[in-house]
Image (cartoon, rainbow, N blue to C red):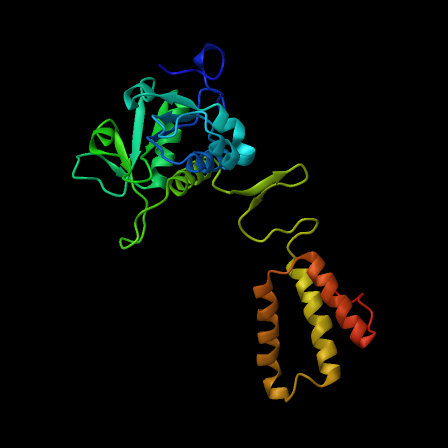
Length: 273
């Protein structure tokens, strides 16, 4: 029978009505791998760890040590004698394997599976993803209990993932499916990182600011005799301007460059822009 981790047998939800999928490790062998799997779960917002017949019994000191800061997840793991017991409260189950084994089941990538599982959990379904033991993975009888198969795109000549690697891969896709733009650790000051150019404390330079920089720089280069001969000046100016456009300059960048030019020429920076 399943041992619940909180009153009423309800797991903590990442938001109301949307309990994240349970991670089910079927006959895991090494305590360290269980701990590393718990750590991967903690990194990406998963917390319900279920163990089916762990070889070395439970609790396991090596597992708790390997879990490090995710030790609470490992300590709260529930242990089952059979896979059927571990999945009894689940509405939808996916099995991870590199070999579909000719079973007629939907085959999903980790990314597609995570998106689909998030939609199901948000509608109130209890979902689980199961992973096989280190030696042979999931057997056919275990896979037969699943609704779908999750298979990662890997090198066919080196397709085997370790147990913690497999859990990490799915857990990462789970987190990404909920907030695909958020990166890294959110901070009190600026929230999570985002893809692209971050410009804290400044903003992209306006065209007026860039035009002022170009006028300032090109005047200095003319005075220094750099933009010669005259017939090549238009091409040289375009190349310099294009270089700055590729930089995606910020307002602070423009101020810095104008300061650099003034330092070399001793010209004031109060020109247009």
